[in-house]
Image (cartoon, rainbow, N blue to C red):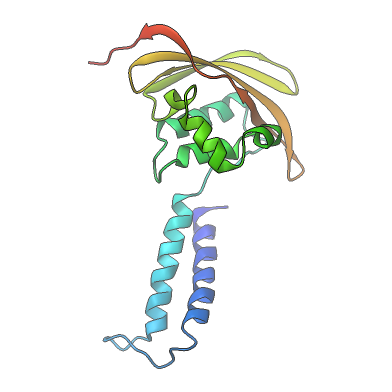
Length: 189
């Protein structure tokens, strides 16, 4: 769904909200003469549209290759708290395979896991590389290296599988191993 479609939907929703909220306040007007409900409706609509736009995540699509899925997730984790706290983790959750979600979910539990030992090096990491390790029609594997906030280099094995989402076959993450330290430190000057 495009941002403009999301904004239209949020505005329509805000009109319903303000219509309900201000039925009991007919006749109230702002100093400029505009009905108070219209002004408040506009404000609520703008807030909802901004919120919807800020939280729009990339959804799994059949057109995404397995490597693109991994990169979408890593890019999101590299800027984890943009535009809101844990937005990167929520983006990763959007690509979690249903079997993975059954073990690691719900989202609140998944968030604690990613912020915990073994995966926290992914949060706001400095850079990453993705190398294909093998692929079939149903499974793809990648070796990922991440330079964490502390400058240390960590390795992960990222596994994806095909999932049926709304009748479409899409690549989704089935498993990521906890961080393995490579013993290397990257220095930035």
